[in-house]
Length: 281
Image (tube, rainbow, N blue to C red; front, top):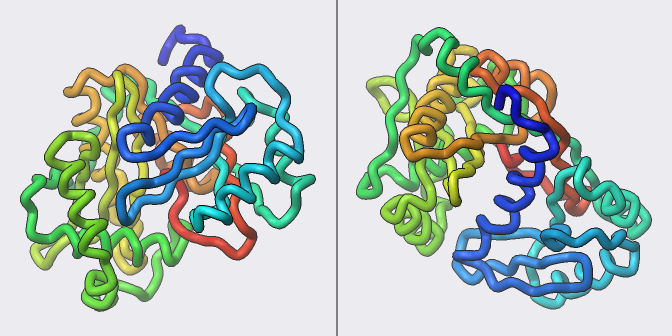
């Protein structure tokens, strides 16, 4: 990151957002917007600005894509980089019914990462053949159900029910992605099992760290930091020269800052106001 123009980084991230879904999604072009439609169970994608388009996006463009999403029965979701496509936010807000979330967009400064102190906790890269995949997904679900970084009362006692709710077909897709290297997972915990998880998804030298979550009762122990450290180290071993994430607020961004991540922009996500779920990071 040192010496690299922010504009170049943002456009590398834009290209990643366009490329990452294409292996598992049908792509539909709708004027200045691209809609990715999942073709595998357990995964949902989004609409976003068409890569390379300089056309301003209007309310009519947004409403046409939302109608298509309703017809297909997929989430009405849009994701984009605020600084690259500033016209999309106004168009979405004019359309109505969608809530826009602002997430700090952070890129790894490798020099700062290598200078950072080693984490006290240890995390492991999850092998594709792990028998605990449903349990690991349950950790993420339970962690994201209570956003933020504060310690809470919910711990591993919530995991059996959350693991039982995991879709077998979705788990099969995830296992295939782990085998191919399209997704890399890391987990941290203790002798009784996992307490924190996360993943990254490398594409053409760029990767996004996402889904980092810790059980509320296990927070403030450095587990999420250990998971992120393991994911970043794996990404660098794989030759990724851009490692980025979007943090769920400034307090979370500050934690990632201790690992060498620096803010370069703002990721915007639009979804129905009642929708929840995990942020990108």
